[in-house]
Length: 254
Image (cartoon, rainbow, N blue to C red; front, side, top):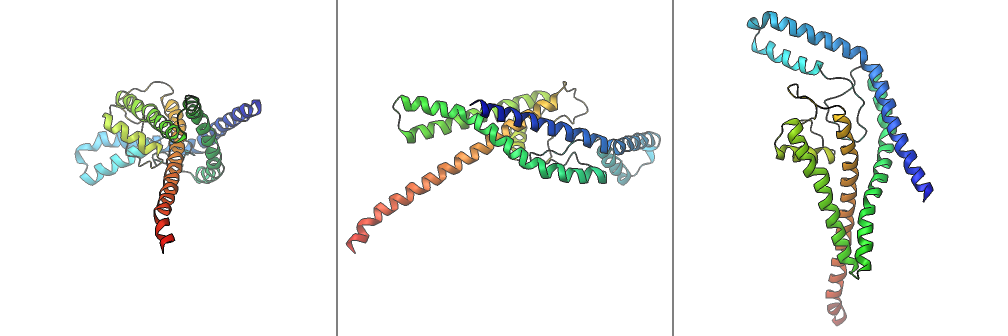
């Protein structure tokens, strides 16, 4: 028991150390490029303010596109496979480091999410044990624990965060639900990204809080997909068994 807790503690510590070291390396590699982009953005803004009455539509569109890209700060590539595409290394060193960072980070992320998923599943196991002691059948216990896991996860990782994003980002509730699912399912279109609106003030460690939500949410949805797959496989076995029982009299008669 102690060894399991120790392994979990070491895994969590190693995971976050890996992220922090990666962030520091990315920051060091991308700092020069970031400064150059900020200077270019400032020069473009100054030129725009001086000559905005003479700009063509094409020049205006180019300014908007370049200005938006130039304001993106360097950051470590997420190893959770979401990949919005809004943050990416621009230097050769940053791109090469990103390859190796992801190469070792993705397996580490899978192991970490698996361990977090096992921790989340303990609630379901305790619920199943409680229902079993009350004399409930195993099939019903499996259904109720899956329903509990699904409902609790939807509330904690989809519904409540959507209210939070509605308040913090100014999105509609449906947009918050959309962003939450697209993020946790690792689709990551990048059409909605947190902490990027210039007209809003975000509290300290806002993105850190969102990152923690993503980590636990990924573990939940991965375990959910695994449970649903198990249920479908069990259902398939039951259907095959029933079909065999139905066809058995006909085979014996022939």
